[in-house]
Length: 249
Image (cartoon, rainbow, N blue to C red; front, side, top):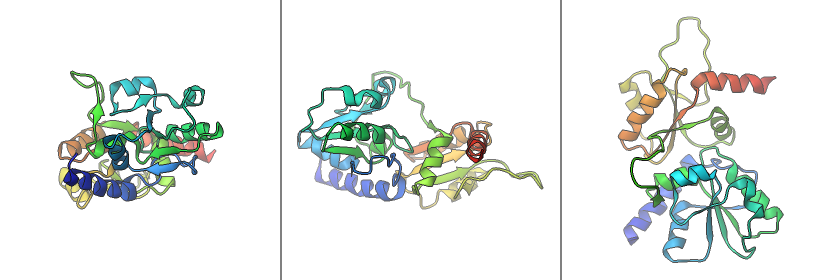
């Protein structure tokens, strides 16, 4: 990796850390040390001794994972024979995922001292164009991946800085509709371009609709324009309403 490339990665990581993934990984393991993706890539380049662990389900690891990572799902990590003197870096998908935090808690409860959580998880790693390992041939991973209502709510509750785009059509007069904190309305293509003005291309973007499929189409359009961390809300406002109604009971 050239010095220029390394500097670009570090600068991009700062943008991601401050704008995108602040609170993006579960905060349950507050004593685990956050580490930026560019720093981990530098450790790899310098061949420093550490273990990079993908704590997602093995099926997801097999579809794609960070270069140099091994697969140890979060629910079994404390049963694996990892040397307690080893520096361990854990990552999940980021963007509201919780597996890395749970895995960190499990290791720390067993006496592991050097536990790190990759800031932003695999989403941040990939957004920064850091090396990804995937099987040859057509990728089984969707061009734009979904985010659950629970994960989005977790991000918003934690104060994560992300861009939320509402692509629903104009509401009928007098109709009360669900609202998501900080969402920018973008009912048309020109409005979408306006809503994206000034948004960093590595920042997390979540597009939502009322469940009719428009969000996926708009999210794919943003990906084609070079935005690297775009997700669509799975189930749209139907899922969002259902989650918030259950929370109020």
